[in-house]
Length: 141
Image (tube, rainbow, N blue to C red; front, side, top):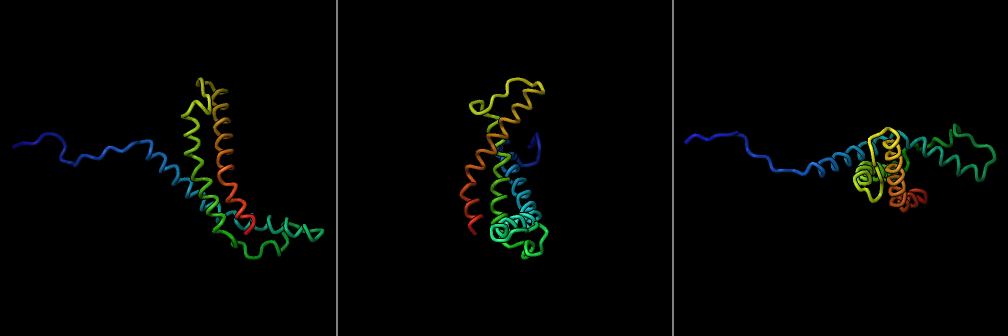
């Protein structure tokens, strides 16, 4: 008996939307880890400088005391940035796809910029609202 067609096994159908969300979250996850590790020393020095200014008159960002233990608290920064950046792209796609939240009427440059502005504002507001408790924990620690 002769078979026709491909000899390769048939692939299971996968929803493209879920793959895109997974990929976008993965990109955000990776960017969050990299940014947390790269920027944690500067974030911690800035925070230390602000705390020291409460008791000392003249404190510069570049004082050695601000740069002691530059990776202290990096695990909290990684957690915050991974969640924040991991949610960013899926929320952008979500708000752009739902006309209830954002109106993207035509394909002109002005309306495209307005649509990007609206989706960015909605995404920023949503992630800020969701991550406010995480920021509180990070600040208190």
